[in-house]
Length: 128
Image (cartoon, rainbow, N blue to C red; front, side):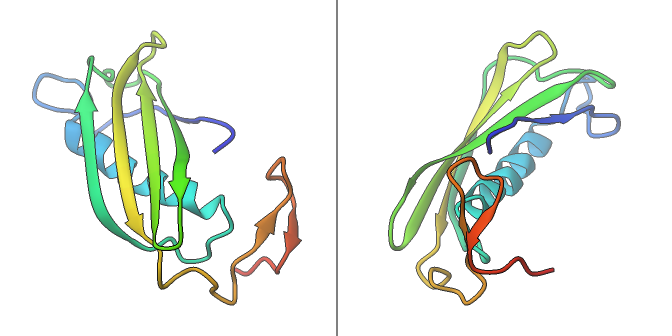
């Protein structure tokens, strides 16, 4: 992802009124998959391994949580992603890794190729 995602949590808080770790894990799953999609994959595969390390409190209700997901490697069968989460103070609050099996999804008829800036499809067609 070229631009980080911004989100203000309201209801997914732990008993100590901070963002629940399960939410961070779920976002690692979703954002890791979306990062793979930015490489033109119509189908983003299935999870093989996923994990999150918690560094600092991620925030309280109404505070901003910023996430940035990137593909760190991609081969013929596996894709590797990292998702960083920053609290409202801009400090690294958590980071996740997500490994996806993409072997059977590569070469899908709806895969596309994006321009270098990621703004345009230069091969294939966008589908709804």
